[in-house]
Image (cartoon, rainbow, N blue to C red; front, side, top):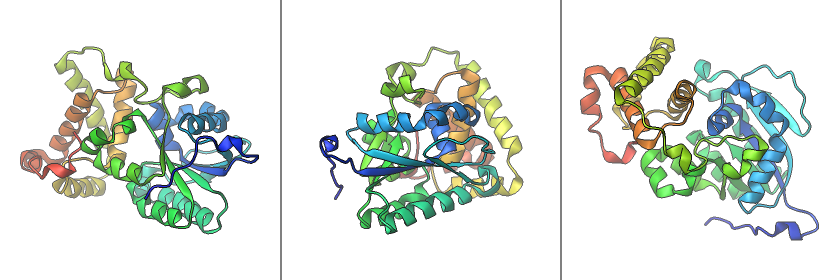
Length: 289
């Protein structure tokens, strides 16, 4: 059973403590930014996350942020500790999973805080989050506006929905945080109401992004992806996030749900080739469209 925490925690003399574990790549995706743009975000991150917690009914004392990034860190930010990880393209996100997961485990086992805010969409964290909760720690997950409609999200992105369902609270980084420098991916209805675009032009631009991504993929990763796509209707979260960011840079806007569906179908067609139609007829439960 999920634990509920009062939004009136500030009424106590000392608010319950919280430590945040933030994947820089995930935060960039969440805000629709490139990772390079995160330098400015880091300076205001404590305030940004603090406001997001309060706006989601959690009045907590955010004591510290652990920042996981594969970029060289030359800035020192108060109450932030940097953790260097390998680029996802080198290890499929294993190093960040280990680093963030180890910190989550130690914080929970040592009862270093009452709450942990996790900024990641790696479904492999699910068991570690469950273990931390069994130690009595409340674990909250940073999310976007799409998480307000979990029924829809379960259809669009079942893996992400499963991870969010484990959270004690989903902390939406939404439109209310714009003043703090955030540019949420699904911030409001205007984002979903994408400007009309010629279908052929859209397909051409999507294809440019997809082909550039595919050309950079090593053959061993291509083969792994082919195997994975035979067993699911979706595409891996990291691939999805990378392509969505690439398309956003080209179109200068987020994709609508239908455009995302088209993007994912095009990826499957490219990766699986002639086998794509048969694979697309896989069971409905695992699809992301």
